[in-house]
Length: 288
Image (cartoon, rainbow, N blue to C red):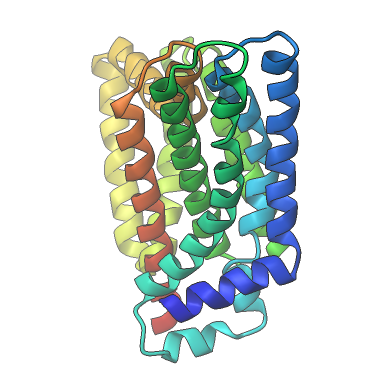
């Protein structure tokens, strides 16, 4: 894993992607720091992280698009598959290399509370708690991008799909009010989600029959729920969509001054899940 980590980290900085990612994160963080804090002598640095998180929409696809897609396109993934390492170690080596790039930006951002301490009293626990949440959130999105990259051999497709997924997640709280207005609309949305899950299971396992049977069972349960309890279906959809609104979980850190342990667990769990799925995608390609 260490060899893969070093190789990936070298490629990120040799190809300038790492420097571009760091530069853009620090650029927008600096703009918000200057506008919200320095010019207004406002010492709460945590207020910048929720608005700055939108930069992930652009920079995460750029950072992660080539991580596995380029290996597949150039057929160098065959060397990885025959190397004496597990698929999990390959994924973690690449993941930690990209997280290291992000951590460089975070290390600079860690100086912001010290700078703002010149203008007032700083809640260091709140400030560094928000920085930690921002780092964990970005790490989870890197894992999402890595998983998407592991599914295709095209960097462009990986970047576009990752951007689309992140856009949906970014606007998820607004979609909740728009999409869960009726039981029929909720059923249609849930049907789309069932179809996506079915395709994902089919792609991950290579077992079309099992995927279609699982999808049919989920769709049957959905129709029964629609007939017996449409209100429960609507509330269930709203709860599901709210659970996917990952960007909103920064708000407790940024605006309420709270250290939200549930958000920390959410980000760590999401990171582990998507790294696991990426490893399983590689395992399937290895045996195929």
